[in-house]
Length: 241
View (cartoon, rainbow, N blue to C red):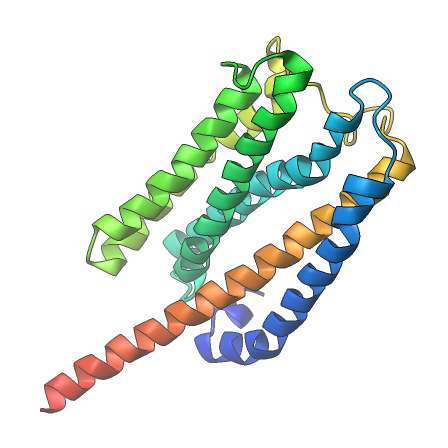
């Protein structure tokens, strides 16, 4: 599977038709999910209308973790098997993951203000999510700081894999330490505690975020492939001259 998609020409052919599909799917799901969650779904019986922000906040948190996991897998493939597009995929995923992590932190602050009475607390979940955001930023900064892309890819992959230790910390922080943040209410022993009237729009929004990531990932990877091809052609022309 990795070898199949690692071929740049094959990836460009597949992404040429998959990118528009992912884009339309993301827009369609957002058009459905946003009004469903923000206007139609019932208010929470404890937190009231303020809990509606979860339809933006929770999918951002889920996919901030999911995208970093994707980056770690791609980085591992790049280090071990030297797949042509593995480093390109990890690099293209980073800005999207950073945006989702930032959105999670911002919306979490807006949710926390009426719920906890504070915009920020050095809580285990909040702090570990902030560390995740900073890891994304550090990963992108490392790519930008090193001119040799081969060396940058290796060092960025090592940083990404080292930073992966934070992913289980973010996920299980509410179980391991006393936390203001509520424990898991969906993926938990005994089944979900969320009513279907709220679960359904939340899952639609989660799929919208995923489709948006797929579209942005393919767009970023295609741009990088074109850039690398243009640079290679420029080198060939310079040598020919």
